[in-house]
Image (tube, rainbow over all chains, first blue to last red; front, side, top):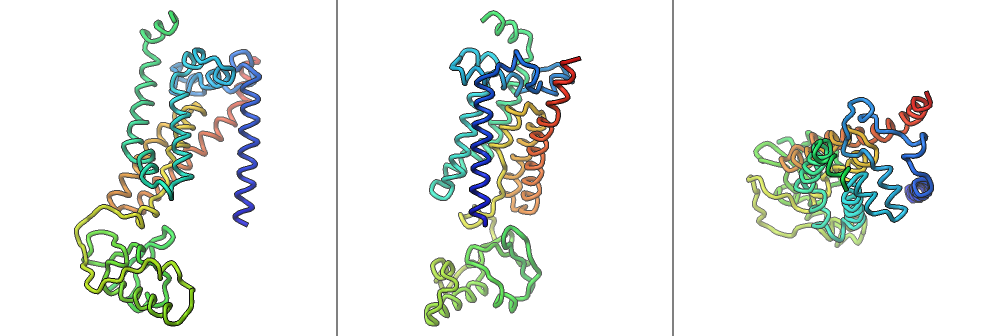
Length: 134
Length: 170
């Protein structure tokens, strides 16, 4: 039964991921109104650490590396980190130290620091100006 | 003397020593009784290790393989010292460490565009520090909170979507 649930979960995850990749590959979120806009951006007017991720994913899936960095420079590091943690979870029994390294407190606080730093940095007028000039 | 143990991440107790004859526990099961500074593997509590060793012997000579994991793992040492100083947790206790959902928290922050994700990361941090301090119940709670924050940010992201489309239509 548990095995069965697992298979269902994996199938659902794969289908969801494939759908998301197809949608974000085919449609440009900046040209369509059907993509969700960042609620914190709507409310506060500031860019949150995740703002621009959808456009960045669209750029990434279309091979536009510069566009991805422009929309959200944190997307690629975040995806790599999520990949590392996922791999560490799967291989937890074989590589317990790797798992500890990527989910330990050093990792958590580093992530927190980077996210907060990025949240502040991207809202600085200087940074926006610099980005505009690129 | 009263004993408390952690089985399947649940704290249980108080138990008398006699009760352990009927409780399924392993050498790594965290145990605490008055006088211990911290949760201690059962194999390092002399009287409990004695029970484990007896079970090992029963299994070996009784021919049953009902508790193969205990047979393999039981610590066969006569003079186990009871360590009352807080120490680094071993891999046995490590297995009880609740997930801090760091990967999901990052995904919630970056992909769902939710400030809640940052709060989830903060709870992720508290899972580890509470567990390292020996506050296992607190770590469990922080882990649950982190999980709910992540679920909430994903759900909110999905719920808000149609409304935003509506707003942009107007």
